[in-house]
Figure 1 (cartoon, rainbow, N blue to C red):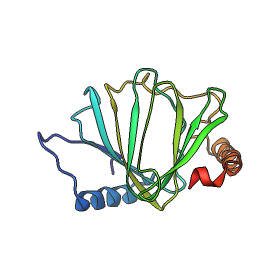
Figure 2 (figure 1 turned 90 degrees about the vertical axis):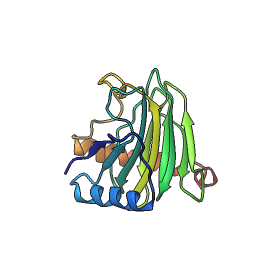
Figure 3 (figure 1 turned 135 degrees about the vertical axis):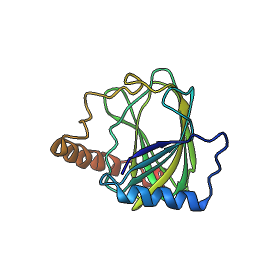
Figure 4 (figure 1 turned 180 degrees about the vertical axis):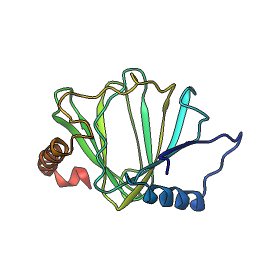
Length: 170
């Protein structure tokens, strides 16, 4: 099953039934991911996406030089980790209906999300168009296909996150 689909309608409305369908589609994918794009194509100037990920999914940290980014939690929970350019943790916070439910980051900030619930659904919005150069990945974070390095990176990251004041992670 595909992991990404683009809306082709002039008007699109999202309700709980649609969110449930997105979660079902994600569960059918080997990766556990699904992205429903409200825009018509990667070339559009505004990108609005409903993203479903599962617990244990690794999304490599990245940053964007020319676009800000916002996320809003729809269902579930995830940690958001912001990094300095050298890979040191700058900030960690939880995105959930009980904690922060929306955040926006400026350009040039490395960031990643770590799903905490079995499935997490969030809404992402940022400027397009999407190109291969849009996401800048740091050398200190392994590529997703290197499972051994990803496991080591995530273990070390979990230890570093554990050093943060628990009240800041809510």
